[in-house]
Image 1: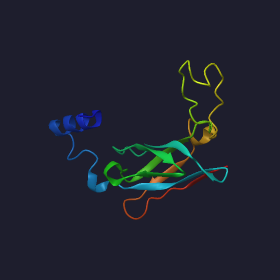
Image 2: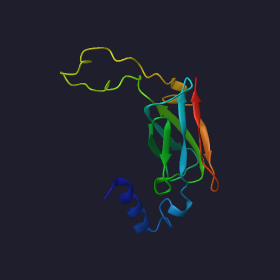
Image 3: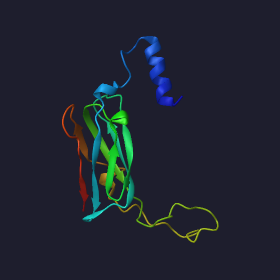
Image 4: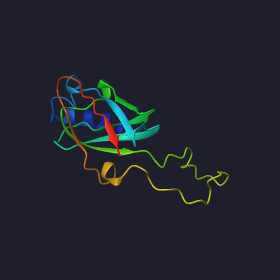
Length: 138
């Protein structure tokens, strides 16, 4: 049982809630991510709830696209969005001693901090309609 499922089961057992992140209220979230006009080849997008929602989720960005399916989707409300994409060098996270990058300084994250660790991006997930959020990071 996952940690999230364990927490939901505990809350339900205590009678504290009528449902844990009601699946009927979850919304699919999709979109595109570009950096300097080009699709982000790979990265991560994360939605952190700001209105006390029980849901928060992330997704992989592949070839400029991401998708959080409804079964893992977000409850309606405002979310802080963070986007990371590394430095654009494949394999830069390989810390093994046989790595061609071993001992070399890894260049910093290429996406500006205001889109990830100091994000200022907020999106509002609606309870009906299309929740498509596209980002074109300069």
